[in-house]
Length: 70
Image (cartoon, one colour):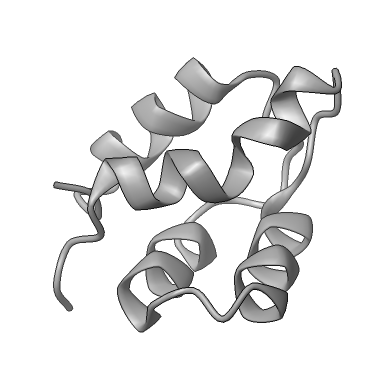
């Protein structure tokens, strides 16, 4: 699996966190499909556990920990 560029992930989901939301894996994957994101971005978001993500920084840390973003 290729690594997703962080800037693509960030631009896709940033507005959710700016609204104060805490999306979970399914919310993020659904958004990625709806916005026709790249397969790498979808795969990266699909690597998350099912718990709500509290912040954009937390999302980045989780994705880095999973080794799925560049």
